[in-house]
Length: 136
Image 1 (cartoon, rainbow, N blue to C red):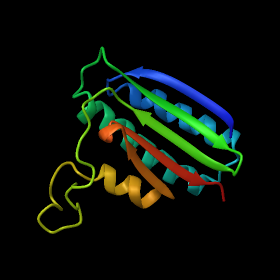
Image 2: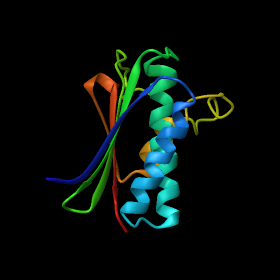
Image 3: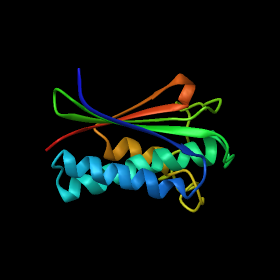
């Protein structure tokens, strides 16, 4: 059961990163998350938002993406980012730590989400990502 829920829809524009960051900061403050944990959450969630804008919608401003923030009864923070793109093969994403990929300008977002979140799940063919963080 979800105790707290906030959900916003934003245009697929880079300026929407600021609104998403503000929502995540406020939600973390309301949930009394430590500063260090909040930093991890922000990096992971903004990576998901950036991917929705850049890859899910390919910067098509009129299209919206959704960011939902939940606190469950088990004190797990859940952030859900959903775009209306066609998705991607999230099982076969290149490893950004591989020497062949280290100097690539993109490709670190999913890696960061998986490393920083306690649980990272892709749904809807990859057009939705659920990031879970236990409150410590």
